[in-house]
Amino acid sequence: MRLIRAHGFVVLLLLVVIFAAFGVLMATPLFNPLDFTIIKDAHILSLNTMDMFRYLGTYFSQPVLQLFFLLEYSLFCADQHGYIAVNLLLHALNALLLYMLINMLFARKPMAVLAALLFAFSVGSYGKILMTVAQQESLLLAHLHLLVLYLLIRNDFRHEGRLSSPYFILGLGIFLLSGLTKASTFSVLGCLLAYKFFFYKERGGRGVFSLDLLILIGVGIVFYVAQSIWGYKSPTVFEHPGSPLQFTWVSFKNIFRYLNLMIFPLQPSSLVERANPVVQIVFDIRTYIRVFLTLAIISYSFFGIVFGSRAVRFFIAWTYISVLPFTGASAPGEWLNLQHLYLTSLGFCVILAAGTMGLSNLLKIRRWRRYIPYLVPVSYVVLTLWITFEINSQNRRAGQQPHVMGWRAEVESLCKD
Image (cartoon, rainbow, N blue to C red; front, side, top):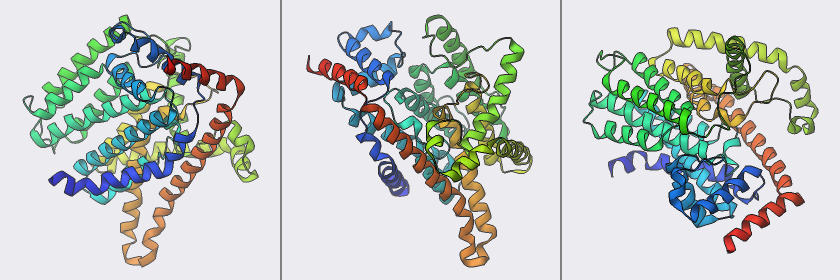
């Protein structure tokens, strides 16, 4: 009851915001070829659920995720409304976990609410991950990622990292049951290591490589070996573009390509081609803008790490750690996928909220001028909604194509069998 009184309003606020902003996505018919494939796969698995323990499907190739999706399939089958509603609920839970994590580390509830709202509006990832059934795996893994991190950080922050604590036992159990992918395993361990390093004093000077972290590293190594031997090999996070030196160089450049895309979401697409002349002019000078943004990102990261608060340092590190597993996935010049920015955008939302409220506090004696800094996050919310609705309109048109309607009729017939 105490938790409900303290945070119940935030839970309600996040749910209202997400369904008001993105509820329109539920009305978009199935359009993605992968959506039809995984629904067919679910139909096959539903005939014998034990097959999922040896199944190497397109997506949801881990038993816990498959079990979750099979439950959905039994409820919704080919009805896209239910699948997208679950996407939005998972997104709301992730925003809530972000709020709880920030409120614990910063102990500043207004800033935690603002960061959670920005994340709820999908600032930085621009709603792409919410639109398809196939992306539910990414949302589920992100939820497990955040839940494990929250439980383990809370155990370390509030309970001195005791292995007998319910928080550690539950966090380790979820980590084990989920069988996280190599990318998620790397991110969880990297973020936990960053937390232990930056909050060294607040943790009472306990060692960074404490026993709880060493246990998770051991489990992560087992995951890595198991995934390499038995896991589904495609689509994979890492696609080797050539020699190790080439791979390293591509990955390094893609770090800043992704961070630029999160802040300045313009890249070649049909949306840009149909946009108004102002957007096209901005797109034409994108190279100069990206050079400036890259320098600004490097500068902010350096000064933030050196002079920022421990919590800000942690979320700067989070931003780099969470994007790193995806930087080897595309060669130079290829289109970058916004869905990979989902967890990375979490750090961006925290940094944006911290900067906004910090500037506002500096202007607090200026009456109405103290609200001027909020124009920046508001602008990002407006941009996010515009991009989301434009992509959704494009998806609706794709869903009306004759061959897509044929696919939809095929999966609907499975539900009648």
